[in-house]
Image 1 (cartoon, one colour):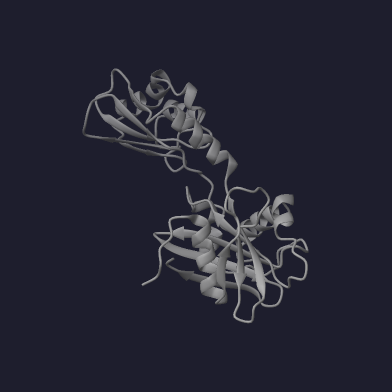
Image 2: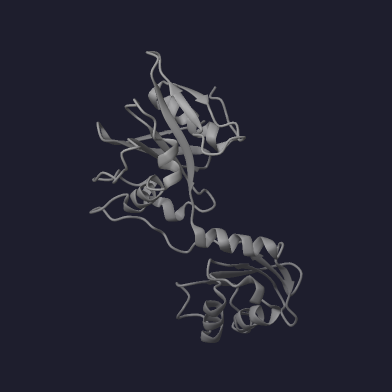
Length: 262
């Protein structure tokens, strides 16, 4: 039975250990800045440093913070006969998402007896005033159901771009994240250890919404990432339904994939 970790750093170390057969030893106790997270200790006595970081979507995180500051965003819109569930996006301005702006979307839908609305697929079939109002408010979808009339529940934002790469350049978004984080001075500093053959940068892909990271569910890249000299091995991982999906790159072997539960 695999050990389950709640801490993302320990989970990353567990993945590296499962693949390399090395033993992770924590170095960073949270008291001293600039200390790498782990050393990976091998049976022959050599160590390889490991730093764990996170790849995020800044626009999505900013929108999530704005949504959270407004609480659960349950509103009441007079004049509606149904309860509605509305889906926001990174383009939604939550401070401006008033009952009036919601009514501009939902009243025309109810008047047209529409209880399922999604953009962009319904852009031509739905009332155009509802479509325009939804786009202006950064709303992606709305679903009516039985419940308290006029009660509107606004879901947290979800990114509306699926960054899946094509077959000519698989994994290009994942590679971009790896190159960006590997170039960060803090990560380079922590992994600049003299006399070390290999050093590891482990990147957790933000699990808030994995759709933009659909790269990791596709085929492995056909090109190498550009890494600074301090970092020789890069890992990219996310979780889908509890399963860790992980890619790693080393110049000596290229890209490899691993999946498991840790």
